[in-house]
Length: 478
Image (cartoon, rainbow, N blue to C red; front, side):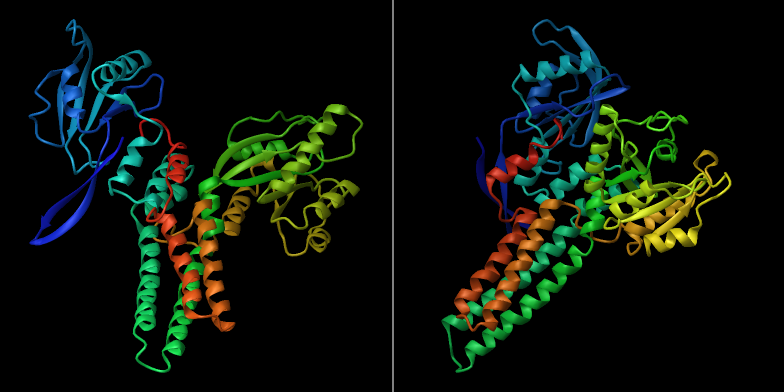
């Protein structure tokens, strides 16, 4: 049970109100399971210091200064048996991640010692933390907003330097700052509308009020559109770019996959149809996290197993954000090549003419006529020729307009994108209502809806069910 208390504090003579939330004391292992040099067991809550003190032999943790690290041993309280030699970090509220007392026990890495310490804490007053509960407490105690809480998980899951920088940018509160500015502008105009409605001193007050709403709706919609313009690149950074490597059999698809991965993940032979299933791997290409899908060669076949692989290849092609169509440059274009060119015509694609180390039978002008404006990259994967140009083209396709992801606020989260689109629709409804001559108090409802939707991004207006769903996706100990 959470108990909410309102506490008044003084800051330079001015009184400020802040909400402090009290919970049970929780504990969890914050480092990945397995063998390692160090493991960390984390405690948070009002009884964190007292709980740690019951199993710690060394300095009195309840008396040491905050933000210090203290040497000692974890012991079994009933027998005095030493469990492990540790360093204990003590961080006292409110200057902690959760704004509660926090203890971090740095013990030797390994499953046995770490679990033994956790079990001792659980049997001496703490309970096991739920997934994401430390971050949830940071949110509920006002340490971070909901967009920053989601950025914590993005930072943990970041697959490239670019995605890490974007997550850090959001964690610093830059997205939240933009959203709050938008909400404040809407709130200011709503307050002015209320005044105009309650105190109509002029005959043209209705005209003035609708003009005010219309101008603000256009302004806020324009600023939201700027944020949404980064959504495609942002989503790619967060979730990875689904990239299908397609082509007829034995054109070098698996060799391309292995080169990008820098390992022999796919079997490569001169026998057509060696790859019979879809192979998926993540790879970092110039800061773009690619979810590479090496597909079975798409062609007509009577082989039952190959047919299944070809069908899965077609499904991967439909779901892909980027298609890399591989063509064997040492052979003339076949009917299957032309079929694949037509099949991928509506996809964002790069056409790769492979095996340029052999005598060429595909002419680039002929191929360019078939594919239109799409890029052609000539490669010889076995000698790495053309691979740098391919990687540059992938980065250019998706990040051509974004040079510095560390200073650019990007929308990366599908939930945020959906809410921004809904807010845009609400603002469109405001403008439509004004054009149709609807009463101001009805138009005001749509403007208020836009304000609420933006508040769901930062958690200023959010339901408990959503919080439970979001934080359940976190790992234990974070």
